[in-house]
Image (cartoon, rainbow, N blue to C red):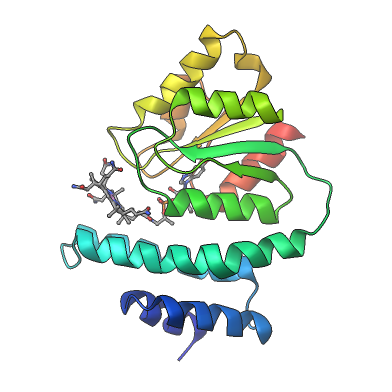
Length: 213
Ligand code: B1M
């Protein structure tokens, strides 16, 4: 059984301890880096999403799969990535969160971990974050970038609301605003006046490297 298969099996068995063990052991044996493990987990969650769309999985299964993955990310992978970073010069501070009305955290957390492991200082504000909280945190820490995740058609408009709030405070030009999440697109980013859109975590890194260069 490959590492990918074992990880998929643990997630589909909703086995938090088993997944944590596999991740720890893969890192100890140098079979995979934490970032590679995150990528595998992301692929499995995409599979879980497809099963949901085919009505083979239902909301309770999504919740337990998400909780299983979150435990491994919070307890093992994020700390390992942070440890690898050590004391380091950062490429810039980014405030990141899922917008108001939206509880989807997994994709946003993957983006956070990838950005961190690529040299950004990430302030992950969590989910259901109102526009004022994004802006107040960005002002407080002197962020260069605000990152807005939305997984729901009905929460996308809150990305626009953050940009409008920045404009009404006359501070729009202080920040690069980037957006992402399944229902969003390049066109949507243009329509709401964002500085960029990324399809996935890797694209978010290239986008930021380009914007900040
Ligand atoms: Co929900 N959900 N969900 N859900 N859920 C979706 C998103 C949905 C597409 C499923 C479906 O119906 N086909 C659908 C949205 C439809 C729409 O509006 N377009 C949906 C719905 C409707 C709902 C509820 C309304 C269901 C209900 O209650 N009836 C409800 C909403 C609650 C709320 O938010 N108010 C709901 C709830 C949930 C759970 C709580 C059960 C759970 C979330 C748990 C959690 O996150 N802690 C959940 C899940 C797991 C999903 C699916 C199955 C998987 C999402 C996921 O984690 N994907 C999803 C179906 C699907 O995606 N196929 C679905 C894996 C993750 C790695 O990918 O999140 O896309 P993703 O992130 C990617 C990119 O999008 C991008 O990079 C990430 C990594 O590559 N990206 C960014 C994301 N943010 C970015 C930010 C960036 C850049 C890139 O820059 C800032």
